[in-house]
Image (tube, rainbow over the protein chains, first blue to last red):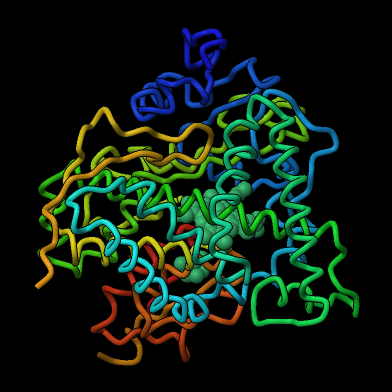
Length: 400
Length: 72
Ligand code: HEM
Ligand code: SF4
């Protein structure tokens, strides 16, 4: 991204793909919140950046002026945008696209996946614990959501590499190069068509079979919508959850007191998981302004995008006392990591289960650990934030 | 404690988006339907020993859908 002009003023020329923003966005957001709560940029063909919780909330609830038809801020706009219902749907189409997806992700369904997830985490740890080191991002965190969603969809767990390649194309490289995003869509479409064809003769109890069996007014979901939703479910759950697990481990590796406290008192896990989700919320979404509107005194123009930063909202000190501190037993925590309003993350129960299980299994076996080299941590690019490389050292487990 | 001063909890269905925070904090007081949306268990009466949990559930609902009232 060295070809992009450097940012001089975050309030009038912000760029969320600037390396300073990606590596440590928090001071930038804090500055904006006091100086210019709704920043603007002419980059990305015009975009706004609200940094206060209340403004993020108002926009999330206002589906009349803010459309989800585009949910990623890119250099170019694809016209028409590629639909991935329900995340790209507005009312009234949103509800019918969303409702049938909810039962497979409800708390009871997710609880049934817990034992398998525990076993998966244990196997991953077995593979590196004797060496006393691992890359917590690539040897551990990334495999958990990849394999869990592969299992749910009923596709080979070994295809995880392929999924991550699509995600990188769609969500990272695709911000500046639309052809990469389109390549990902094309390849995923071929992949899922093949999976659908496989189920013509034999339905399983997987999510793809479940979706093929859905009927609305007696008719199955049209193929283009079905493919859009399958691409969404594959993409939405992987690097998001990977980021949440990775960022939580990063925090524990760099904060000795919190790590020891959580190991000594596992009953803190309920509030700790919510606090990690608040402080390191991985997902920033977007909306397109479709009708002239004013938010917090700032007029917004149709056609411009809004970078909808749940992570910045979660750091607003007006909403969260000591917002910049991780408080493992924070009692009041209305964080917005999974969004607010009608698009609340469908996978929130699953993501919470995976995050909690990943931390529990890790801390049980590896209570003491630290970064091999703080400068060796590489954070992601794009609007899902988390560590992508994170070499970690710990005492090797001696098997007796 | 008389029936009169009993705390009651209620979920505003049109606000609830199924974050499931209420039920994980106070499983005694909430039920989740197949779609993940919450409602108060039974008639919503909160025994005195659970009042603190009910307050926490209210204060952690991101959609402000949990309502507490006192009967009087
Ligand atoms: C820690 C992990 C995760 C985070 C932080 C996260 C965050 C979010 C956020 C903020 C939204 C709201 C989008 C908006 O308002 O435009 C969302 C929507 C969504 N998420 Fe997640 N997500 C995570 C994991 C997952 C998982 C595991 C899945 C399932 C496989 C998933 C599936 C979805 C879907 C389908 C939507 C669209 C819902 C709708 O538009 O009605 N997510 N997610
Ligand atoms: S926490 Fe709030 S939004 Fe979530 S299920 Fe409970 S009432 Fe509904």
